[in-house]
Length: 175
Image (cartoon, rainbow, N blue to C red; front, side):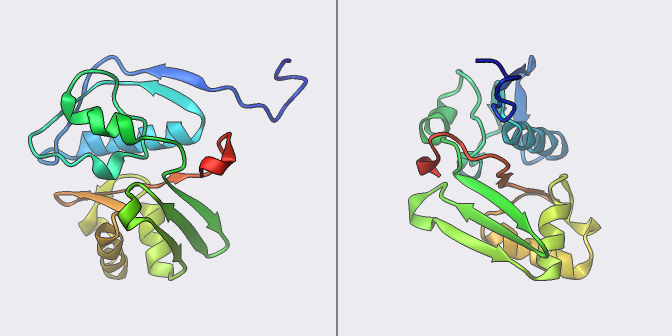
């Protein structure tokens, strides 16, 4: 079976990140840019091998839907054990965003974002940026999304956490 015979068949690509990534909320720009890249490459069926070093007190729970770092720190064992496809994703419709979040069973939820400021804040934060760069109504919406753990906030920096669901994983019953 070849890709030419089955054009819808998607084969994962592989990426390796050579240097360990420092997950440090005190210096958020680079780690949030990396996490956004990781989220987006995961969406595109790219497997990423990477290592991380966490600053003391970093809570990795909001990241459980992203591919965990390989080996190393015991701090990431729970992340590696909990990770599975489809834990936190979004789909886009005309004027709305639908989000499903099952990273933690006790807080599992579905969200329909249909307010213009909320949709704008969610989509603008797909690229990590400063909260202060958002318009006032987007900033208020972003804070609500942070409270629901759909945006990650480190200092004044924010980033959208859910991955975009472009293809259903197989088996799709797991989503």
